[in-house]
Amino acid sequence: MSEQLSVNRSLFDQVMVPNYAPGAMIPVRGKGSRVWDQDGREYIDFAGGIAVNSLGHAHPELVKALTEQANNLWHVSNVLTNEPALRLAQKLCNLTFADRVFFANSGAEANEAAFKLARRYAWEHSGEEKNEIIACYNSFHGRTLFTVSVGGQAKYTEGFRPAPGGITHVEYNNLEALKGAISDKTCAVVVEPIQGEGGIVPASQAYLEGVRALCDQHNALLVFDEIQTGVGRTGDLYAYMNYGVAPDILTSAKGLGGGFPVAAMLTTEKVAASFGVGTHGSTYGGNPLACAVAEKVIDIVSDPAVLAAVKTKSALFFSLLNEINQELNIFDEIRGRGLLIGCALKEKWKGQAKDVLNAAISEGLMVLVAGPDVVRLAPSLIIPDEDIKAGMVLFKKALQAVIAAQKS
Ligand SMILES: *Cc1c(COP(=O)(O)O)cnc(C)c1O
Image (cartoon, rainbow, N blue to C red; front, side):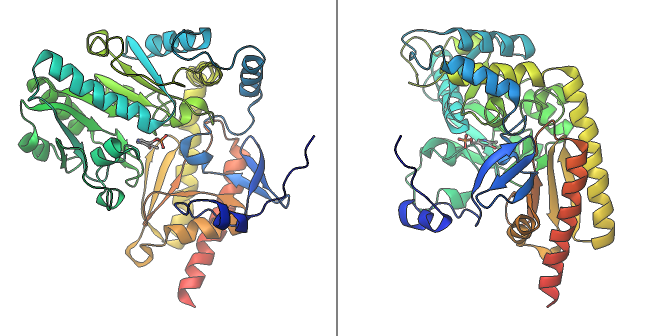
């Protein structure tokens, strides 16, 4: 066996492209909602790998599904199909509006497939002119050139133009704005049921219903990007289920693999027909390792008892967060659904979400940000109540440290 190279955080700056700014500690091990770093220091995990580790770290059933599959078959490519992919697709169809599934490896790729499919469907049924995609300001749909251009945050396309054409942005949760922009040239409207990266902003019931109606009126496909909100994150298997508004295409990733890279685009039989043989593809999409793990994630998360527990744990988070805020008065609003929670900083603390994240790390707690002004929590869907309570004690200390630093 070759000896392992010893590494530390400073090596990052020497060997990695500088597009990330990772924190000082390097995690090496995780179990449930606890993580340990190189020095053996313990952390409580309210970040969940950015809404990815839906069942925490090293869940025994996921480890079992992965290792069993690893001993059988790793990869065959889409020249052949495979059993885990078929089983996962069947389950996703049984559990949702969808009749057909396309697998990819990341959220961006699932969205790329969704946007291409929407164009192709319109091209086939209505002609070349119907190619416009409408998305929302502050939305996030991934980092490939197409998906980042559909996303509604200008800073992410800066320096990468020319961007693909035929994309329009409108204000989120504003039906009048969409009414003004949509036309018979619109092939798709793309919406996150809760804007994630944009600050944990839920769509209103009237908005999603209105978007559905406008899409129908103009023969445009409705695409729900549920990459962050899907797979039990909100307490429903997919967030659209709570609204009672079904899309034509839905994208799922992040929590779907519980930490193993996998994504899916779900759609109807009629729309799927426009992706005929050879129109689109992926070498790894539907990989047996990824699908075996995702199948187990779906088995566990689709259990009504697990989904109900997400809502109970959510209520515990909200009550403890409100209690802390009553004392510290640092947040304007604590919002979100299920275990996707955004704590929006008051005017005085705006821009300091990253300071809260760093202070939390110092206290032994992992949290996230959603933009400069919102602290985001996206823990494991099965985080034990004791970890929620213990983590909240650390969260309060972190907030107190940020408050003290501003006073001094
Ligand atoms: C994370 C995210 C994506 C991109 O997923 P990747 O796996 O990073 O490509 C797209 N849409 C939403 C809503 C997301 O939260």
